[in-house]
Image (cartoon, rainbow, N blue to C red):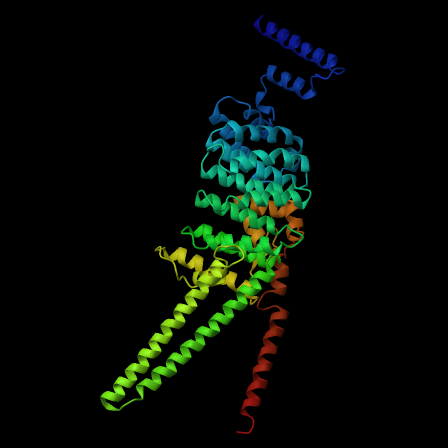
Length: 478
């Protein structure tokens, strides 16, 4: 009897589901076939066979009231978008993603706001197409969060600044929107936490690589003056970001005239210093040749005193000249000492703070490469091996800076996006292999690569003949 009642109940429930499905076809609230099938599965005790989309499940968790549940959902979604290219999911749920992330930025905790910023950036990179309406909807809240208005801390500001730069890079349809974001990031250089300022400098220089036209001379001088001031900061990350920004400006042609004048002045200054050292050495040699008693010693002392006083006057004039350049620079800051400061950092000089060996090596290698790029001696390059054996080769300061910014943001998912994300293909101008080339079989390897193969024997005979010919030439005539 119990089994018959259960069967009757299952049949009645199934009939009601079918009736709902048939009645709902005409209205907007129709019941899908999947829901009917899931109802049948549940009633038959086959709940294990139901396939629930994890992406949609995490999206539903964003509407929960408990903050920890929302944080876990944001973290899971960020991992999904980072380690895999999920364009269809982002396109289908773009409104839900953006609205929930903006809500988290406005009202969420520090952890929730930071995760929401990261998720927004990954969502933007996955979409990869300009969208002015989406950019304008995200920009005000991202600027407010990056400026620290929500009080979330430095981690939230750094994440928001990175996402703001990515939004301007991908979504902005014209240069005006990108320049507005650049001005907002530049306003963050002067105050705040060092990590936030470094993130603002990195985002600004990342957007410089996007500009089509050059900066005005006054604007370029003002930016270089501000960056010169940042080179004197104690934080190594901020110094490095400022030096890289100078290199990007040089590579993109935004400050060629100003930087060329600086490099020329630096070369002239080094030449003057070398001439002064050579003159001082000659004076010292002349003074050492005097061998005539007290009078000659007094005369030599007078000449050496005169030489030392002249050297002091020259050093004082040199210092005054540097101070004059600093005071009369176009930016009103430390523009005149920009190149000299970068050379000091390339040699680990002029740093009062004691640093670890790793930090000194990192600073030295970074600024040596930047000085080589500024002087045109060599260009940085980077080779990355991709999933199917091919390589991505990036050359130049601007291209390597783009690569470093995107690699920092994508972290562990950088390889997956390099392989499948069309945005990165367009940014770096390459097309990866879709599959690995066919591998040689064991027989083919034995025939072509073995030491007993015909090719190997031919190479051995060739080398033997070359050695014999060389020996005969060297021994000829003895």
